[in-house]
Length: 477
Image (cartoon, rainbow, N blue to C red; front, side, top):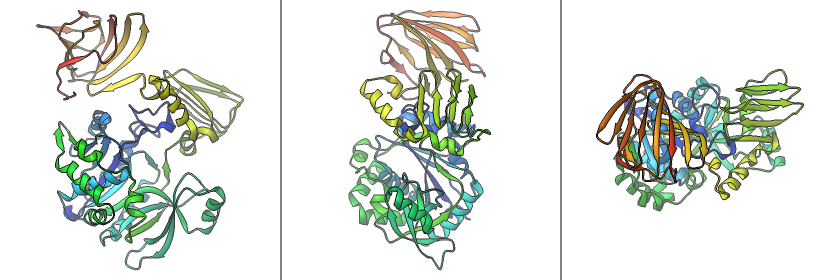
């Protein structure tokens, strides 16, 4: 396959994954977590398309709040040529697909884009790549290819695709006869028995030029705003920021509703590569390695007389379960979730209640990630707070000051270079420095190993918004 015929992987990474709370939260959603193995869902998705003879540099369409996390995960895979496109707000998959197609056409008038949610699990990666090869034949002829997953149960949580007649010129591809919304149980059972229906997995292979033409025909207003948002986009370090005003004008609509359910170009490749939409804890139980009692246990877990349950401790306390079945128990440092498997789709209801109460646990995990590393609150008291801070090798915080608090830094391990007004102070293990209220300061890690320190804040107000950034290498406002 020549370079001009390479497929551009487009990863949609804008979701929050609230049904996988408390592990997945808005500030650190499920696609950025290692839920299935040691790689995150985003990394696994990209790794399926790293053959540069077939695939071009990836395009990640993301929430701007996650930009540094995504960039770091790409760097960990050695990917330096990806485009990270930042949406100023969520507008569903239709505008994202339109902007991705326009972006791909800037480099290749014959580009094809492989649109994939960044939070799906696929067990048979070779089978996935074979399905892409099959789809590429139809996409080369201007067709819009969906990947239909052979159903394994009469699921009511997925949309379905009814297969039409096979394409004579594209072996393994069939026309789309109809799209069906999430059906009732009886209808889903009939679909499964007929063998003529597939789950709609939300993965598409699309010729970019024809897709833009179809947007012009079916959703011209959306396309106009998408085009303007890309034309007026700005570069910000490693990121491409879409123009907020133009992008906000896009209607919030899926590519399914905007294009796929209206076009005559829609075709489907029936696949069976072990696809799972990791949208709930029971989905992780389905694909997890089970013991002889049907349990999936992750982390510090003790189970006695427990069956068919998902037990996980992620930086939290020991999870000990006795004499229960069909449960989901997930413990983090600040939350313990307990539900039955048949109610785990409703976890998002808990998140909404917590949001309504203004609880930070709804959106933010105890470990708060920043482009330079992360911090974690250890203890909150009256007019004081203790944090653990970890700074990556070579990274540094912004040059800043506070109006309401003083800070004391104690190095646990590593080396710290501290700016305090006009001073430069080098600290090593077990050494400390005091930063009085109002002083201009910065923390840097000049070493080759992570820097860990304890920060003690004291003052009448300790909120994160009491930071005046005077200089920031990460261009944060």
